[in-house]
Length: 265
Image (cartoon, rainbow, N blue to C red; front, side, top):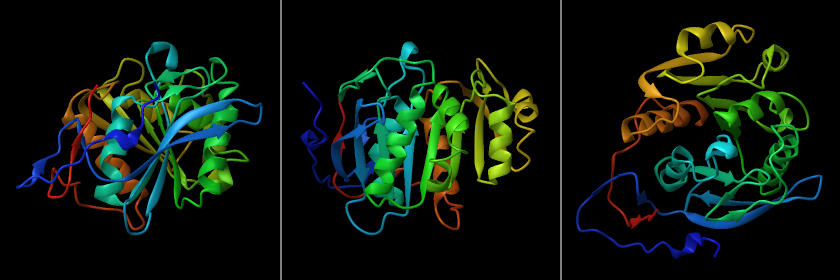
């Protein structure tokens, strides 16, 4: 059965609630489908603020599906739970071709990041057609490869503001792609865990040197998968500070005084 985001049951606590890993805050959530230029149907979810303006839009690109990555990878799930309510940010999550999650399975099969170019284009096109403003790519691990390879060239480049990379391995993306980002001048923020399995902060600074304006940030204590609320929260705060107009110097609230629901694994 396909997961329905309308199935969350919200209640109003008598006191502010601490925001934990499974805390779901109010948003307009809907299952969506993306159509690629080669005819595949990709499944996803769009979470929008319940009220007020949409200040920014995250188009999320998940970790490697052959190693457990999908649209529900925990940082993205928490972004969809929290950011519409806490920061007025829309979050688009989807499964790249051949990837499965409780939302369903996207058509096609894994293509080593090549055919996935059309998945990135389909997601950006969807966001544009829905009128979602201030669009940013957010890639994690394999998703950073997609953002780097396809975000700085058309038809994507003119439709996004920039990209945020979480744990980039730089396995598929090359200096050619980095030079395209350099030429684009678009913001590129790179969050690199101190204990990453593939690329650690000192090496990352060197690898990203072809992009002079890239903001490479080493995160002490973190690992590739950003396990732990401390590190997931750090990522979300960094994302919000980057994408909100004018930036944000304050951390996201850790309590919520309104209705809440609890997500079940």
